[in-house]
Length: 224
Image (tube, rainbow, N blue to C red; front, side):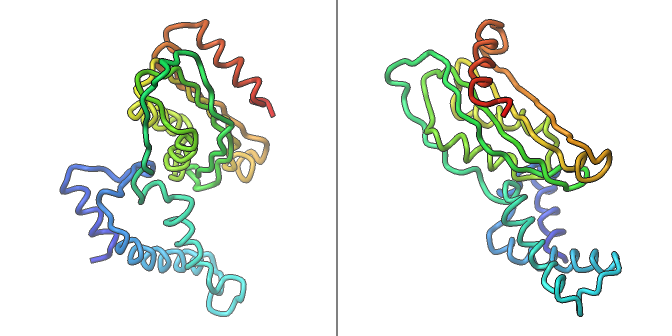
C-alpha cells in the first residue's frame, strides 16, 4: 500500500479529515514524511513527463521532482504535517486592558484551487484577558496556519481560532491583506489583492473599539 493510502486510512479510521488546509500531524510521524516524500517525488516526475518534459536528459529538470516534493512537504505546506509550535503564555500581571497590535506579519500560502502563491501581510489586534503570549508566537502561529493550501477567507478564520484558543482575550482582530498569484500569474493576469478580517469579542460588538483597531493598523503601513 502506498504511504499516502496508509495515512488516509488511519485518518478515516479515527474520524478525521484531510482537507487541503487541515493539519494532519497527529496521524503522521516524521519517518513517514520521508517515505511520503519519495511517493510525491514519483508523482511529480510523472506529471512532468505528462507535460512532455524530458526529465531524464534535460539538465534543468533532472532533479526537479525531488525539489518539488521537498518544497511541498517541508516548506510551503509544512503547516499540514507538523504540530503547532509551542505557544508559551504568561499571566496578564498588570491587567492590561488596552489594544495592542502585532504586525505586519509576512504570510505566505498557496491557493488551494491552483497551488499558486498567496503573498501578503497580517495584523493581529488584541485586548488581553487573563493571559498573554510572546510577541514572536503570533508570527509562528501565522506561519503554521498559512503554510497549507488555503483560501484566504478560511485562513483568516483559522488563524483567529488558533490565537483565541491560546489567549482567550477580551478582543481579537485579525486582518490579512494578500496578493493572489492565481489572479496575477494566470487568469486575468492583473493585480489581484484581497483583504479579509475577523473580529471577536469587544471588536465584534463595539464599533468604536473596532474603528480604533483599524486606525492603528492603518498607521502601521496597512496601505504600504
